[in-house]
Length: 299
Image 1: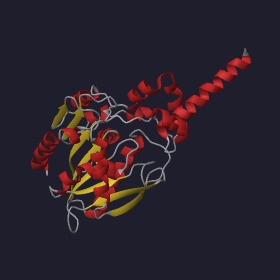
Image 2 (image 1 turned 30 degrees about the vertical axis):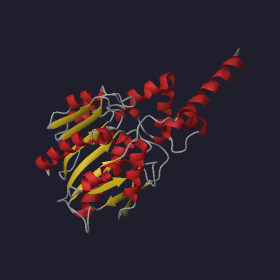
Image 3 (image 1 turned 180 degrees about the horizontal axis):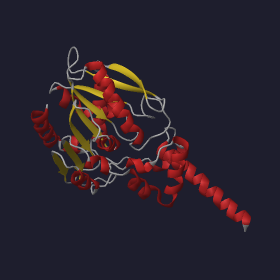
């Protein structure tokens, strides 16, 4: 009986460790990745995204480096809209397991045509940045704040920034929305979660407690800090909330809850029949109209 219990515990620990690596770490178990990684988007989504990413990568770019509070070397990519550098910057924060170009590429024409340079870092454990583990907005939000300080030091405190977060990046910009410098004129939050624990508990079920404990023990990342609601309640910066009503990755139900938390100037774009982070692809005209309205009012 004792041997059977020990074997069962070993199996549970092995499964938990593999699931933990799959969700949080840069290097994922190959078997789980093969079994679980699935394309969630249809149509020409991936073709458009990848083409836009390659077009952005071919643009003139200055690469900056910064150390995170955890000692990791992070890279940020600055894509000017013309010769020299503008005082208007769209700071785009990418999502889970993405990178700067894959996310910012689809917004290049939108922002460059309106006179905005684009700054897009690779988050920890993504792209060309260092680090081994995703922070589920806990690390990423702290890094974004540090990048904002960097941009002010590099380009002057008179810069005007649109802070634009996608998916996990949307959660990150909500997390820091109560601590933003004056140079951030408004925030766009696209498909972000309001509490990473809700997503992870739905994905991992009874394994969640062990996995959260591992993350706290190994990387000092407490997932209760992924909750952005108190930050939103203290925020005064104007917000545009964007979410697809058919989102099966970050449930749409989180979007009106985020909207309700924010007490300051705000607007929203909630689109029927749109999945996770698809709004800019399939409802682009409405997206641009909302952004132009905010630009005209706050920049």
